[in-house]
Image (cartoon, rainbow, N blue to C red; front, side):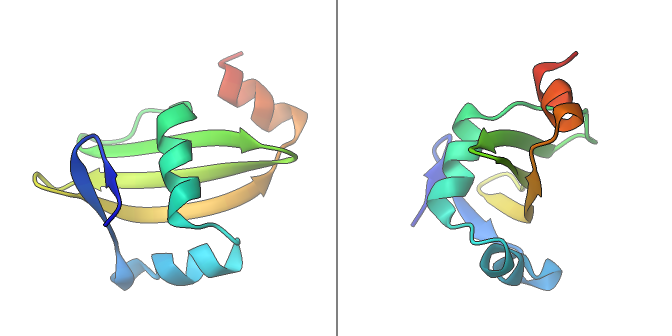
Length: 92
């Protein structure tokens, strides 16, 4: 069982998060690292957290929903780290 901030993490199978993880070669350890070290680049609605973390030449994105007793992983992705994306992460 994987946890973050003392709450368990569950994948949202209705949104095919598990297939997104396979397509982008992301595992739960990468998601937890993204949540711990990543930056919130834009504000989402209440209860939704989206963090971006640079790993080498790419950026990992993780979006979570706070469901009270647990976190629901709604989206994961990997994009190329361009200059524009890195400026967004830095907040420039």
